[in-house]
Image (tube, rainbow, N blue to C red):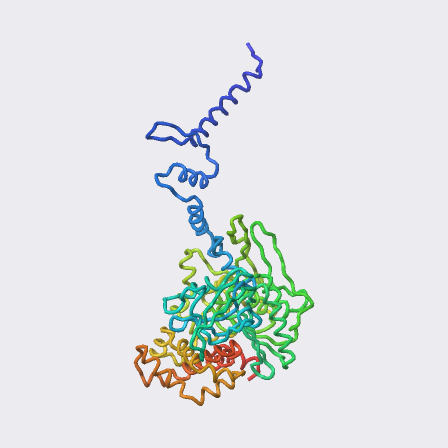
Length: 534
C-alpha cells in the first residue's frame, strides 16, 4: 500500500531539527549562576563587549568601564604587527604635533640648567620674542608658582608653558644685570615646527640638507631651502636622513619626486583589502639634473626608506651609511568620538624593484624593538653583512644592480661605526652628559661675548683662542671624572669638537652646530669625498 507524502509529513522532521538546533545554540549561550541556580538569558553579541558589560554589572568591586577598554585595546593589537597602535585622546595631540608642523605655546627653546629653566633661543616672530624675552633669561616662576630648584622636568615645563592660542601665562624672569625678577604676561600663539634641521653649502658646489622627520610642512621647507642653495651655487646635494624615523607618506613621495624623472616609480602600496596603488614621479622635479647622495643609518625608517629606496632602485644616486631600520608597513588612522585614534596597518609598501623592506616581527614586539642591539652585537656596525638577506629576497634595480628586501635598505657604500677617539674617559663624560652640560654652562657665563658672533667660524676661532678644553677637564673632574692623560689625548678632538658644536648651537642654533660637528662625522665626510670626486 502506497502513501502520498503530505506537506505535514515532509516538513515535520525539518521543523523538529531546527527547534533542536536552536535549543542547542541558545543553550550554549546561556549564562548559568551556580550560586543562585538562576540562568541569565544573555545572548552572546560580541564576546569582548559582553565580558566588559558583565564586569561592569556583576564584578565584586566597582570598576571604570572606560579604563578597562583603554587598557584592553593595546593587548588586542599586540597580536598584530609592531606598528598597529592605539593612541589615547590625552596622548594624540602630543603624538601628532611633530608631524603637523605647529603647536600652541610661548615660542622659546629651553634647557634645564642647574634645575632652572634657561631660555636658549626665542622663536623668531613668536609671542616671547615680541614682548622682549631674551636668550639667556631664566624662568623662575610660572603663574606665580616656583619653577626653580624644585626638581622640575622637561614635561613639567612644557605642560605649564604650552596651551591654547589666545590664553595667557605669566612668567617671572631672572636676567643678567637686574637684581629683581622681571614679570611678563605672554599670550600664547601658534608656533611653527620645522622638520628640516639645516641646509647649507658644505663646499662651493655641494649642499648639505638634513631632514629630521617627514611632516606636513617638509616638502615646502625643502623647496625653500633648495631655491636658496641654488642661488649659492649648488650643483650637487647630500640629503641626510639619518635618525629620521619617517612620518607622512605623501611628504616622502613629494621629496623623492624632486629627484626623479617623469613617470619613474617612487613607491607602491598593496594590502589584503587595499588594491595596488602606485605613486609615480611627475615632470616637476627641481633636482632631476643634480647629483645626489642619501645618508641613512639604523634609525632611518619608513618614509626615509621610501626616499632611499626610490633613489636606489632607479639608480638615481648613491646611498651611504649603514642598513636602515626596516619598516615597510602602512598605517591608516581611524578617529574615535572621544578623541582617541587607532593606527592600523592596512598595507605594505614596495620600492620600485618590488621589494618590501619590512624586517621580521615573528619573534614578538620586544625582539623586534631590540633588533638593533642584535646588529651591534653581531658586528654589523663594523662590517657590512649581506648574509642576513636570503636569495629569495633578491631584486634588481633598473640598471641590474642586486638589492634585497626583508630587512631595511642596505647602502651602496657601507661606512662602519667610527670608534676613533672612543676611550673609557670619553664614554664616562658622554654617559653623564657632561659635554652637553658644560657647553650650556659656558654659554650662559659668556653669552654677552658669544652673542657678538653671527657665523660658526667666528665662534670656532674664538673658542680655539681660549682654554675651553682645559676648563672642560676641570668641570668633568668636579663632577667626579678622574683625569686620564693618555685617554684624554686620544679623545681630545672628539670632545673638543662636540664642545664647540654645542656652544655654537646655543648661540646660532643648527646653523652653528652642523658645520662644526661634520669634522667628526665619518659618514658625512665620506659622502663629501665621493660626491666631490675626491
